[in-house]
Image (cartoon, rainbow, N blue to C red):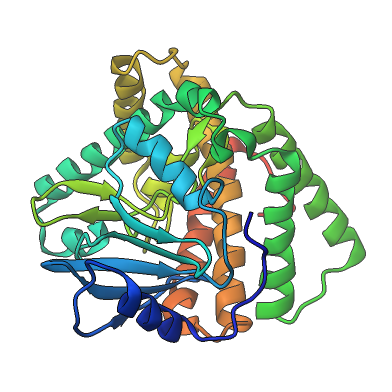
Length: 334
Protein backbone atom coordinates (compact mmCIF):
# COMPACT_ATOMS: atom_id res chain seq x y z
CA UNK A 1 0.00 0.00 0.00
CA UNK A 2 1.20 3.49 -0.83
CA UNK A 3 0.03 6.30 1.42
CA UNK A 4 -1.83 9.00 -0.49
CA UNK A 5 -0.32 12.44 -0.04
CA UNK A 6 0.36 15.35 -2.31
CA UNK A 7 3.95 15.70 -3.54
CA UNK A 8 5.96 18.76 -2.62
CA UNK A 9 8.56 18.53 -5.42
CA UNK A 10 7.18 19.71 -8.75
CA UNK A 11 6.35 17.21 -11.50
CA UNK A 12 9.43 18.14 -13.61
CA UNK A 13 11.69 17.84 -10.55
CA UNK A 14 10.33 14.41 -9.64
CA UNK A 15 10.66 13.22 -13.23
CA UNK A 16 14.24 14.46 -13.56
CA UNK A 17 15.17 12.75 -10.29
CA UNK A 18 13.49 9.52 -11.45
CA UNK A 19 15.33 9.51 -14.77
CA UNK A 20 18.67 10.02 -13.07
CA UNK A 21 18.18 6.87 -11.02
CA UNK A 22 16.55 4.46 -13.47
CA UNK A 23 18.56 2.08 -15.58
CA UNK A 24 17.79 2.36 -19.29
CA UNK A 25 16.85 6.02 -19.27
CA UNK A 26 19.03 8.14 -21.52
CA UNK A 27 20.28 11.66 -21.00
CA UNK A 28 18.56 14.33 -22.99
CA UNK A 29 15.86 16.97 -23.01
CA UNK A 30 12.58 16.61 -21.13
CA UNK A 31 9.79 18.29 -23.11
CA UNK A 32 6.53 19.30 -21.43
CA UNK A 33 3.40 18.25 -23.33
CA UNK A 34 0.19 20.21 -23.01
CA UNK A 35 -2.38 18.51 -20.78
CA UNK A 36 -6.05 18.62 -21.78
CA UNK A 37 -8.08 19.65 -18.69
CA UNK A 38 -6.05 17.14 -16.75
CA UNK A 39 -4.59 16.89 -13.24
CA UNK A 40 -1.71 14.88 -14.72
CA UNK A 41 1.43 16.33 -16.30
CA UNK A 42 2.82 14.75 -19.46
CA UNK A 43 6.38 14.92 -20.74
CA UNK A 44 8.24 13.51 -23.73
CA UNK A 45 11.46 12.01 -22.41
CA UNK A 46 14.54 10.27 -23.82
CA UNK A 47 14.18 6.51 -23.33
CA UNK A 48 16.77 3.96 -24.42
CA UNK A 49 17.32 4.57 -28.15
CA UNK A 50 14.05 6.40 -28.69
CA UNK A 51 11.58 8.52 -26.71
CA UNK A 52 8.72 7.79 -24.34
CA UNK A 53 5.92 9.73 -22.68
CA UNK A 54 5.93 10.09 -18.90
CA UNK A 55 2.65 10.74 -17.08
CA UNK A 56 3.39 12.37 -13.73
CA UNK A 57 0.53 12.22 -11.23
CA UNK A 58 -0.10 14.66 -8.36
CA UNK A 59 -0.12 11.85 -5.76
CA UNK A 60 1.53 8.46 -5.17
CA UNK A 61 -0.48 5.41 -6.26
CA UNK A 62 -0.66 1.65 -5.87
CA UNK A 63 0.19 0.16 -9.30
CA UNK A 64 -2.08 -2.85 -8.66
CA UNK A 65 -5.22 -0.72 -8.52
CA UNK A 66 -4.24 2.44 -10.39
CA UNK A 67 -7.03 3.09 -12.96
CA UNK A 68 -4.84 3.85 -15.99
CA UNK A 69 -2.73 0.72 -15.47
CA UNK A 70 -5.80 -1.40 -14.68
CA UNK A 71 -7.68 -0.37 -17.84
CA UNK A 72 -4.49 -0.64 -19.92
CA UNK A 73 -4.15 -4.29 -18.84
CA UNK A 74 -7.79 -4.92 -19.75
CA UNK A 75 -7.59 -3.20 -23.14
CA UNK A 76 -4.34 -4.92 -24.14
CA UNK A 77 -5.79 -8.31 -23.27
CA UNK A 78 -8.86 -7.47 -25.35
CA UNK A 79 -6.74 -6.41 -28.33
CA UNK A 80 -7.52 -2.69 -28.00
CA UNK A 81 -4.47 -0.78 -29.31
CA UNK A 82 -3.36 1.34 -26.34
CA UNK A 83 0.22 2.51 -25.61
CA UNK A 84 2.58 -0.06 -24.11
CA UNK A 85 3.66 0.62 -20.51
CA UNK A 86 7.45 0.70 -20.14
CA UNK A 87 7.96 1.46 -16.44
CA UNK A 88 6.01 2.41 -13.31
CA UNK A 89 7.01 4.08 -10.05
CA UNK A 90 3.96 4.34 -7.80
CA UNK A 91 5.84 6.04 -4.97
CA UNK A 92 6.89 8.85 -7.32
CA UNK A 93 3.57 8.86 -9.16
CA UNK A 94 5.14 8.18 -12.56
CA UNK A 95 4.10 5.99 -15.50
CA UNK A 96 6.41 5.75 -18.54
CA UNK A 97 4.60 4.67 -21.68
CA UNK A 98 5.04 4.30 -25.42
CA UNK A 99 5.37 7.54 -27.37
CA UNK A 100 2.75 7.50 -30.14
CA UNK A 101 3.86 10.82 -31.62
CA UNK A 102 1.74 13.95 -32.05
CA UNK A 103 -0.73 12.96 -34.78
CA UNK A 104 -4.13 13.09 -33.09
CA UNK A 105 -7.01 12.01 -35.30
CA UNK A 106 -8.49 15.50 -35.46
CA UNK A 107 -5.18 16.71 -36.91
CA UNK A 108 -5.18 13.85 -39.41
CA UNK A 109 -8.64 14.94 -40.59
CA UNK A 110 -7.24 18.35 -41.58
CA UNK A 111 -5.02 17.01 -44.37
CA UNK A 112 -7.17 14.03 -45.41
CA UNK A 113 -9.69 13.79 -48.24
CA UNK A 114 -13.34 13.21 -47.37
CA UNK A 115 -12.95 9.59 -48.43
CA UNK A 116 -9.94 9.19 -46.12
CA UNK A 117 -11.82 10.92 -43.28
CA UNK A 118 -14.67 8.47 -43.66
CA UNK A 119 -12.22 5.57 -43.55
CA UNK A 120 -10.81 6.98 -40.30
CA UNK A 121 -14.33 7.26 -38.86
CA UNK A 122 -15.12 3.67 -39.72
CA UNK A 123 -11.87 2.45 -38.17
CA UNK A 124 -12.71 4.32 -34.99
CA UNK A 125 -16.27 2.96 -34.89
CA UNK A 126 -14.89 -0.57 -35.23
CA UNK A 127 -12.76 0.13 -32.14
CA UNK A 128 -15.87 1.10 -30.17
CA UNK A 129 -17.44 -2.26 -31.01
CA UNK A 130 -14.25 -4.03 -29.92
CA UNK A 131 -14.28 -2.16 -26.60
CA UNK A 132 -17.88 -3.27 -26.05
CA UNK A 133 -16.85 -6.83 -26.89
CA UNK A 134 -14.52 -6.65 -23.83
CA UNK A 135 -17.44 -6.07 -21.41
CA UNK A 136 -17.47 -9.64 -20.07
CA UNK A 137 -13.67 -9.73 -19.79
CA UNK A 138 -13.75 -6.53 -17.70
CA UNK A 139 -16.05 -8.29 -15.25
CA UNK A 140 -13.93 -11.46 -15.21
CA UNK A 141 -10.77 -9.46 -14.45
CA UNK A 142 -12.63 -7.42 -11.82
CA UNK A 143 -11.35 -4.33 -13.60
CA UNK A 144 -12.04 -0.98 -12.02
CA UNK A 145 -13.99 -0.21 -15.21
CA UNK A 146 -16.48 -2.99 -14.40
CA UNK A 147 -17.19 -1.46 -11.00
CA UNK A 148 -17.93 2.05 -12.24
CA UNK A 149 -20.98 3.02 -14.26
CA UNK A 150 -22.96 5.83 -15.78
CA UNK A 151 -25.64 5.24 -13.19
CA UNK A 152 -28.35 7.75 -12.35
CA UNK A 153 -26.20 9.49 -9.73
CA UNK A 154 -23.26 9.97 -12.14
CA UNK A 155 -25.41 11.18 -15.02
CA UNK A 156 -27.32 13.56 -12.74
CA UNK A 157 -24.10 14.93 -11.28
CA UNK A 158 -22.85 15.76 -14.78
CA UNK A 159 -26.11 17.53 -15.61
CA UNK A 160 -25.98 19.49 -12.36
CA UNK A 161 -22.40 20.46 -13.27
CA UNK A 162 -23.77 21.84 -16.56
CA UNK A 163 -26.41 23.92 -14.79
CA UNK A 164 -23.96 25.24 -12.22
CA UNK A 165 -21.22 26.27 -14.60
CA UNK A 166 -23.12 27.27 -17.74
CA UNK A 167 -25.72 29.44 -16.03
CA UNK A 168 -23.70 30.34 -12.95
CA UNK A 169 -19.98 30.47 -13.71
CA UNK A 170 -20.17 31.44 -17.40
CA UNK A 171 -23.31 33.55 -17.67
CA UNK A 172 -23.59 34.76 -14.10
CA UNK A 173 -27.33 34.02 -14.14
CA UNK A 174 -29.68 32.57 -11.56
CA UNK A 175 -32.74 30.89 -13.08
CA UNK A 176 -36.16 31.74 -11.74
CA UNK A 177 -37.42 29.11 -9.30
CA UNK A 178 -40.06 27.81 -11.72
CA UNK A 179 -37.61 27.60 -14.63
CA UNK A 180 -35.02 25.84 -12.51
CA UNK A 181 -37.58 23.30 -11.27
CA UNK A 182 -38.86 22.52 -14.78
CA UNK A 183 -35.33 22.12 -16.13
CA UNK A 184 -34.30 19.95 -13.19
CA UNK A 185 -37.31 17.67 -13.71
CA UNK A 186 -36.43 17.18 -17.38
CA UNK A 187 -32.78 16.47 -16.63
CA UNK A 188 -33.75 14.02 -13.87
CA UNK A 189 -35.92 12.12 -16.37
CA UNK A 190 -33.02 12.09 -18.86
CA UNK A 191 -30.62 10.64 -16.30
CA UNK A 192 -33.16 8.05 -15.15
CA UNK A 193 -33.86 6.77 -18.68
CA UNK A 194 -30.21 6.52 -19.69
CA UNK A 195 -29.24 4.83 -16.42
CA UNK A 196 -31.86 2.15 -17.12
CA UNK A 197 -30.33 1.27 -20.52
CA UNK A 198 -28.33 -2.01 -20.75
CA UNK A 199 -24.66 -1.33 -20.01
CA UNK A 200 -21.50 -2.18 -21.91
CA UNK A 201 -17.87 -1.21 -21.48
CA UNK A 202 -17.27 2.40 -22.55
CA UNK A 203 -14.02 4.31 -23.06
CA UNK A 204 -15.91 7.33 -21.67
CA UNK A 205 -14.00 10.02 -23.62
CA UNK A 206 -13.78 8.51 -27.09
CA UNK A 207 -13.23 11.43 -29.45
CA UNK A 208 -10.77 12.53 -32.11
CA UNK A 209 -8.36 14.11 -29.60
CA UNK A 210 -7.98 10.76 -27.81
CA UNK A 211 -7.27 8.72 -30.92
CA UNK A 212 -3.73 8.79 -32.29
CA UNK A 213 -2.34 7.80 -35.67
CA UNK A 214 1.08 6.29 -34.95
CA UNK A 215 4.17 6.22 -37.18
CA UNK A 216 2.93 3.01 -38.82
CA UNK A 217 -0.45 4.55 -39.64
CA UNK A 218 -2.26 2.52 -36.98
CA UNK A 219 -5.08 4.05 -34.94
CA UNK A 220 -4.32 3.93 -31.21
CA UNK A 221 -6.49 4.69 -28.16
CA UNK A 222 -5.31 6.97 -25.32
CA UNK A 223 -6.75 8.63 -22.18
CA UNK A 224 -8.68 5.48 -21.31
CA UNK A 225 -8.25 5.53 -17.51
CA UNK A 226 -11.87 6.62 -16.91
CA UNK A 227 -13.45 3.64 -18.69
CA UNK A 228 -16.71 2.50 -17.12
CA UNK A 229 -20.00 0.76 -17.89
CA UNK A 230 -22.67 2.71 -19.76
CA UNK A 231 -25.16 2.77 -22.63
CA UNK A 232 -24.11 1.23 -25.94
CA UNK A 233 -24.54 4.63 -27.61
CA UNK A 234 -22.18 6.51 -25.27
CA UNK A 235 -18.83 6.27 -27.08
CA UNK A 236 -20.47 6.61 -30.50
CA UNK A 237 -22.14 9.87 -29.46
CA UNK A 238 -18.83 11.10 -28.05
CA UNK A 239 -16.93 10.21 -31.22
CA UNK A 240 -19.41 11.62 -33.73
CA UNK A 241 -20.55 14.73 -31.85
CA UNK A 242 -17.90 15.94 -29.37
CA UNK A 243 -16.33 19.29 -30.26
CA UNK A 244 -17.98 19.56 -33.67
CA UNK A 245 -18.22 22.99 -35.36
CA UNK A 246 -21.79 22.27 -36.52
CA UNK A 247 -24.33 19.44 -36.31
CA UNK A 248 -23.74 16.58 -38.79
CA UNK A 249 -26.63 15.73 -41.08
CA UNK A 250 -29.25 13.30 -39.80
CA UNK A 251 -28.49 11.04 -42.78
CA UNK A 252 -24.79 10.96 -41.86
CA UNK A 253 -25.57 10.08 -38.25
CA UNK A 254 -27.97 7.34 -39.34
CA UNK A 255 -25.32 5.85 -41.64
CA UNK A 256 -22.78 5.70 -38.81
CA UNK A 257 -25.29 4.24 -36.36
CA UNK A 258 -26.12 1.43 -38.79
CA UNK A 259 -22.42 0.85 -39.51
CA UNK A 260 -21.84 0.55 -35.75
CA UNK A 261 -24.73 -1.89 -35.27
CA UNK A 262 -23.29 -4.07 -38.03
CA UNK A 263 -19.85 -3.98 -36.37
CA UNK A 264 -21.43 -5.09 -33.11
CA UNK A 265 -23.01 -8.01 -34.98
CA UNK A 266 -19.66 -8.96 -36.50
CA UNK A 267 -18.17 -8.97 -32.98
CA UNK A 268 -20.85 -11.43 -31.88
CA UNK A 269 -22.65 -8.92 -29.66
CA UNK A 270 -26.40 -8.94 -29.11
CA UNK A 271 -28.54 -7.31 -31.79
CA UNK A 272 -29.96 -3.86 -31.04
CA UNK A 273 -33.15 -2.59 -32.67
CA UNK A 274 -32.11 0.32 -34.98
CA UNK A 275 -35.08 2.52 -34.02
CA UNK A 276 -34.65 1.97 -30.29
CA UNK A 277 -30.91 2.57 -30.64
CA UNK A 278 -31.60 5.82 -32.53
CA UNK A 279 -33.78 7.00 -29.64
CA UNK A 280 -31.10 6.11 -27.07
CA UNK A 281 -28.47 7.80 -29.26
CA UNK A 282 -30.45 11.05 -29.24
CA UNK A 283 -31.09 10.93 -25.49
CA UNK A 284 -27.38 10.30 -25.01
CA UNK A 285 -26.60 13.21 -27.32
CA UNK A 286 -28.57 15.55 -25.07
CA UNK A 287 -26.87 14.29 -21.89
CA UNK A 288 -23.33 14.08 -23.26
CA UNK A 289 -23.69 17.45 -24.98
CA UNK A 290 -24.85 19.20 -21.82
CA UNK A 291 -22.08 17.51 -19.84
CA UNK A 292 -19.56 18.80 -22.40
CA UNK A 293 -21.02 22.33 -22.26
CA UNK A 294 -20.60 22.22 -18.49
CA UNK A 295 -16.93 21.32 -18.94
CA UNK A 296 -16.39 23.99 -21.61
CA UNK A 297 -18.07 26.59 -19.36
CA UNK A 298 -16.01 25.59 -16.34
CA UNK A 299 -12.75 25.63 -18.30
CA UNK A 300 -13.63 29.04 -19.76
CA UNK A 301 -15.02 30.85 -16.73
CA UNK A 302 -13.22 29.20 -13.82
CA UNK A 303 -9.91 27.98 -15.27
CA UNK A 304 -9.31 30.80 -17.77
CA UNK A 305 -8.96 28.46 -20.76
CA UNK A 306 -11.61 30.06 -22.95
CA UNK A 307 -9.34 30.17 -25.99
CA UNK A 308 -9.43 26.38 -26.16
CA UNK A 309 -13.01 25.69 -25.04
CA UNK A 310 -15.45 28.58 -25.49
CA UNK A 311 -15.72 28.08 -29.25
CA UNK A 312 -17.45 24.72 -28.74
CA UNK A 313 -20.30 25.91 -26.51
CA UNK A 314 -22.76 27.24 -29.10
CA UNK A 315 -22.17 24.45 -31.67
CA UNK A 316 -22.70 21.85 -28.96
CA UNK A 317 -25.98 23.52 -27.98
CA UNK A 318 -27.08 23.29 -31.63
CA UNK A 319 -26.36 19.54 -31.57
CA UNK A 320 -28.23 19.11 -28.26
CA UNK A 321 -31.26 21.05 -29.51
CA UNK A 322 -31.32 19.12 -32.80
CA UNK A 323 -31.74 15.89 -30.82
CA UNK A 324 -34.22 17.39 -28.34
CA UNK A 325 -36.40 18.64 -31.20
CA UNK A 326 -36.25 15.31 -33.02
CA UNK A 327 -37.36 13.59 -29.79
CA UNK A 328 -40.08 16.26 -29.32
CA UNK A 329 -39.08 16.49 -25.68
CA UNK A 330 -37.42 18.78 -23.13
CA UNK A 331 -39.41 21.99 -23.70
CA UNK A 332 -37.90 23.73 -20.67
CA UNK A 333 -34.38 23.04 -21.93
CA UNK A 334 -35.26 24.14 -25.45
